[in-house]
Structure formats: structure tokens, C-alpha cells
Image (cartoon, rainbow, N blue to C red; front, side, top):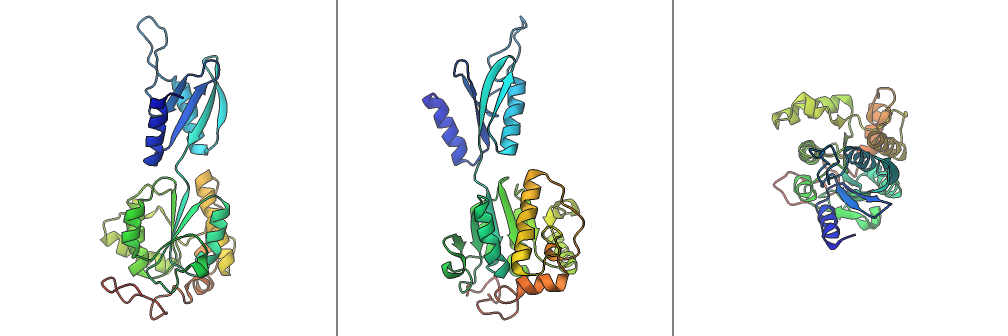
Length: 280
């Protein structure tokens, strides 16, 4: 690899831009795709100096599937190595479901950040050594800049915390956006988000009730339904039958599992009184 190509690769990685390094095995020629131009045929019909179109398509597939591959293009063998930004999971709400969700996500290779201004809840004692941001979700989300490798899940049931996070998530390229709450809660949420400028097409990106329909009841079961849905969306799998409640559980049971303090609005210890007040 030339120093110039290495510098470009590092620049793409720093910018969290998905790219693939394509190496021709016969002579070591390399392209950084899709950054390098596609090949254009010369007037005499001979191929140009850019990357063959079929190689670019194979590179895009490797990036999408996050898997290296050997391919043959125009009679030449190539090895394609995707360089994707890390998978991230941003969890808004340091609640019981989050405590079950975080270790599952870590096992699947996600870099997890828990966001909650309630310092009594977002603690290392409850979540271990994961990144915790004890700030208001709108400030935290703006700093984290969700991208196409980011999943966002809101779990607090508190519009002061969930709505700003969802607002910023909908304005991002996040590949998954999920929100805990019953269908009635989701309908009220859509009304508030509509006032923030989001139309029905935009709000359709929100998975709510969140999680696959596995009839989940307990916090760990609901967490399992959420991480399964995240994986299914990322892999393009069918998502199963329509849900009947949060995480595929009945609305009351799911909200009780996720919303009992910590995490339920209205007087739980550490609950911020309003956006203007200092986080507890």
C-alpha cells in the first residue's frame, strides 16, 4: 500500500466513512472504493485506468454485508476488504431494560453508549465499563452524530428525554431507531414529533412498539426482542408478525418491566424536573 493510499484510508476511517480496499492479486494494484473513480473506456475501446464498474459493485456489497471477499472481475482476481465505521448502539435511559440490553449488544460487537442525565441511574455499578453520558439527550446526540452504522433506542417513557433524542435520530442516517412504549404512547409521540417538523414518512422510521414480536414480558426478554430486531434490520431479514405491544409483549407488562423506577417519569429518584433544571 502506498503512503498516499494509506493516508486516504485513515482519513476515511477518521471521518467514519465506509470504504473498501480492493487489491488485485496478480500485481498488487489497489483501489479505495467508492472513493476512486470508475473506469471509463478509452476512445479505442480499451479499458480506462479507473476501477472497473463490476469491482465497484462488489465493493459496495462487501461494505453493505461487512464481509471481506474474493471476486473475479474482467478475468482478474481481487480481494476486497471493507473498512466500516464501528457499529454503535445509543441507549437513552438507564433503566432495567437497558441493563439487560447493554451486555447483549456488547457481545454482538456494538460500541454502546448509555445516555441519561439522572446520575443516580447512569452509573458504572449498574452498567459496568461502558460509555455513559450524564447529559441531556439532545446535547449528547448532537455530539455523538449518529451515522449509518448507529442504532438508537429510547427507553425512558419521558418525552423530555425521549423526544429530543428521537428528533435528532430522525435527522440522522441511523439505520435503526426504536422507542419503548405502547401504541397509545407512540401515537402521542408522533403528534409531538410532528410539531418538531417530522412528517409521517420520517416518523415511520421509528420502530415502536420496539422489538420483535416474541411475546416478551420481562426486562431481559424485551431486551432480547430489541437486539434481535436491530440485527434483523441490519441484515435485511423479515421482521415477523406485527407486534401487539412493546417488544412484542402486552403494553402494560412491557411498560411495567421497562418503566418502573429507574426510568419512569413523575417523581422517580434522580428524575430531572424539567429541561431547564440541572440533571439530578
